Image (tube, rainbow, N blue to C red):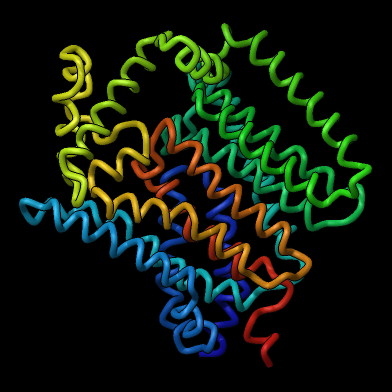
Length: 412
């Protein structure tokens, strides 16, 4: 048994990290199967250890179980036949927080945040290389990676890029400035994917990082930092204005501004989204407790759309908005699920031990939650394996691995 645990520590843990962060946009939706299978295989051996048993009682792990049960209640309440429950199985990866936490808690160390940041940096570089190959090698209009789709590819690219900043927050010396390349590469890959939400997610995460840095600076340096941030923001605005006509991804802010300022929809894509959102809200109001289920929630909203758009979105599986998706498909239980899904990483990080990696750990959690929360305003992160599986396992890595010593060893 001990030899198997040593094998898990030396090989399975690095393999899970590599699959989670480096292979994410290298092989897309195939990557989660690698680390999920590895975690399932090692879980029985972990349960024989104190780490494995402690993981079953971890508040965040219990929170994921509560989230799954909440969603299951919504599915069951809206089901009309047995196969209406089939897609509930898509959310079982939430439970794999438990073996992932047990595995990485055994391997926690003072350099873990920098190791995770290094993997994420490589993952962002892989994403950018993949995007460049798609656009200039294959001649595609929008990068999408391998075994992947444009929107998940873009979100994962940006998220990996900003996760690399954990190395900047936890390391020392000028060498750590290399982690600044992460957001640049990740955002560039997202822009090449042509997804308008990618720059919005990047801007939100950049704001979180800027605020976190400001909070750590002495008061006299905060004004200087604010000046630097303002200058960078103005440069970003210039890029958006100068290149918006050439790159689809850069039109997102302009679209939001036009809609909020005068109520106009500048393109067909935005018009469809507005109609989808109206339909989703009306569907939720028609069945606010249990919703309409995975197969029928979009159909329930189509009756409130204009005829041409209702015809265009026939057989669509989501409303291009995760908040409204879960409200319409599982009612208040879907809303409870999504709230837990977004909050658990951040609450877990804030409540974690205040060691040398606490700031990096909190930023990592904010990056994961912020990416899902912002992306969820414009699309879904639950339509494919890559993003569906990423958050609970990444949260386990942040809370279990990125701390100075394992909880069990510290207690001893």
